[in-house]
Length: 402
Image 1 (cartoon, rainbow, N blue to C red):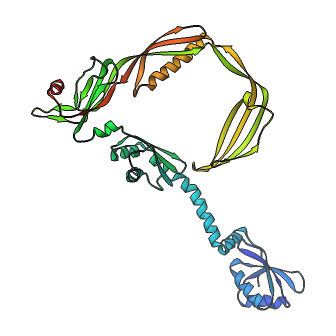
Image 2 (tube, rainbow, N blue to C red; image 1 turned 90 degrees about the vertical axis):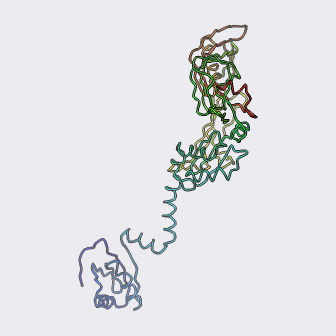
Image 3 (cartoon, rainbow, N blue to C red; image 1 turned 90 degrees about the horizontal axis):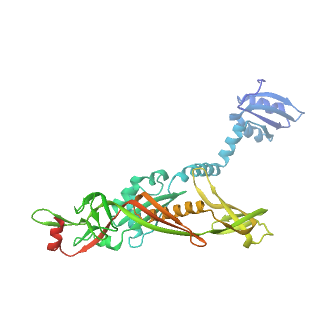
């Protein structure tokens, strides 16, 4: 019977027996290594055995009527024993941990918005063929290749965008106008006409016959690219495709008052906290003592985001309300001119499908109680718009196309 120091694979047990030494001789006869024996009294002793022998020792001694209690073992062995006793629990925890790291990077739901005439099922089938499907990587579905594949699969779409919100992919689409859909029919043709007066800068005719050239002045409604192509012995009718950029002149007038209301805030403020779960709001602490009519309110929302970018429908809202007084102050002429110029340029850009402002000339006037800015903007913009042509080409159209 050996007596030496402990190792990491040892277990300390406490044995209570009517004949303690007979129990130890039985273990020695069975070839079980026992060491570091400490006799507490005539009936009790503590000893160390190997972990692999614990089950056999417990079975033999309890068969004799002895009491065996485990007093200490390594943490790794305790964890191993716990896992073996509850395999389903720990397997579920492991699976849940893996899913919490893997699922936020995958698509679990695909939605379509913006469609009216095109069935949602058709868009979802085209998206699946393009690679936008369940469990696809979130970074992959946002690529330009996916969007172009979707537009190629459904010609009725004018524009498509793909955004991801956590595990949800949203396909936003814009359908073509009714005239554009009609122009795709076999017996219909379309032409590109000018939407504004201007001087042509560039012409790109992808399909059809160009009727203008750079440097040419064109009028609103004038045909720029014809859908009829002279093939020599016949005239082929098709849908005109292309882009025409021209220099245009836009005049914009913007006005604002010379007096502006401003809020002066003091140091008195109140804060409130709320938790939003889905569509339900729960107020945690609400400030009071300030009327909402004379208060400025600032709200900040902090959504709960898990690792991997998965956003839960839970958010914390912090609101700060500060009391103040409304005062009327005069606006400086320079500040008013900068603001009006900014608004005028933003308005001009919003009226163009594509283009830029090349030059601007502005005149500032000060009528009573106001500032008036009149600006002329020289723009380079795309003026070509598609127009449906119905019927067979007549002689006049043929001569013009040539």
